[in-house]
Every structure is written in structure tokens, then in C-alpha cells.
Image (cartoon, rainbow, N blue to C red; front, side, top):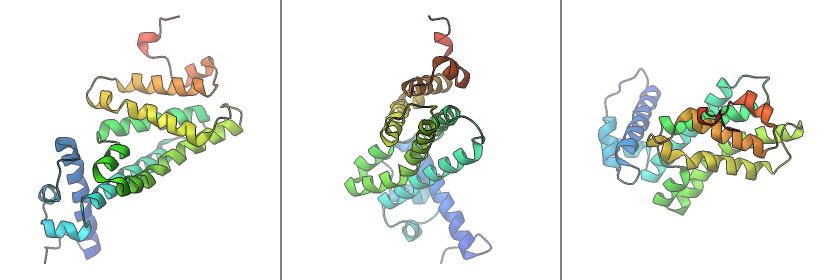
Length: 216
């Protein structure tokens, strides 16, 4: 029987699960999603492989749990950090910023790439896990359209396009080829202008990137 390192069994399991998630985080960053194994994760977490299987039956289940944890943390952080009573444009800007910061902090493949490496069933389950983020952005777009702040474009499709722009900057950000502030400004400004927000309003939400300030 494994040694209990917490006051209760439930607390012990929670602590062990946290170590497992931390191990997955570190291994994906150092080895990549395809190369990590359950043995690697168990070793990095300081538990036996048998103990790991008591928490997750296989690698897809482990990665799904990890992805869900990151997505839930993002949604919770967004709801906590976004001030109330601000415009939808500012909420959209904050959403984009948090997405980009998440990429820098957790430079892992997006759900589509994870799904491709794990198979179609896992991809669908991953898509279900990331859906709350797209719904969160859709809510901002719908509210902006209802108040006249944004043009009334299809919210779900527009949210998907915006997230695609964010995802397109994953590799440049992770490899240090793109600046976080500049990327945030470019995506936010492009999105807001596409939603019909006047340039003068966009300028109050997020300034032009420094390199563009002097351009006409």
C-alpha cells in the first residue's frame, strides 16, 4: 500500500493527482506530446506506474484530464480578473490577452494537435473540454452585438475565427519570435475593427503596436 502523505486519503489522492498534473506539464514542455509515456509521468510524479493507473487508465485519459484542468483554470482566471462594468471591447481584449498568456505559460500543442496524436475519439472529447472557452468568447460577442457595440455577426463562428488567430501565434510566441504585447494588440485591433468598432474607440482599448505608431 502506498504511503499516505496527507491527513486523509482524499487529501492524499488530491495531492498525488496534483503532482501527476505537474509532471505532465513539465514533460510535455521538455519532450513533446508524442514522446511522453505513462512510465515517464509516473517517474516524474514520484509514484509507481501501477499507482498512476489507479488515477488514469491510459495516456489519452491523462492528457484529457490535463487539458481540462488548464481550460478550467483559464475560465476561472478570466472570470476573476476581468473587472465588471467594462465595455465588451475591453472584455474581448482581456480574453485575447489571457489566451496568449496561457500559450506562453503552457506551451503545449492545441487540442486539434493533441487529438490528432491520440485519435478521433480523444479529439472529440478534447473538443468538448475546450468548448467553454469558445462559449465564453461567444457570450462577449453576443452581448456586444445586442448593445450595438459590435456588428451583429454570427457569434459562434466569429469566436472560432478569433481563437484561430490566437492559435496561429502559438509557435511564434513559444519560440520567442513574437512579442506578447504586440501580438495582443494586433489580434485585438484586427478583431475589433472586423466587428465594426471605430478606430478611435479601438485606440482607447489597445494602442497601436509601437512599430506602427508613426505610420499613416
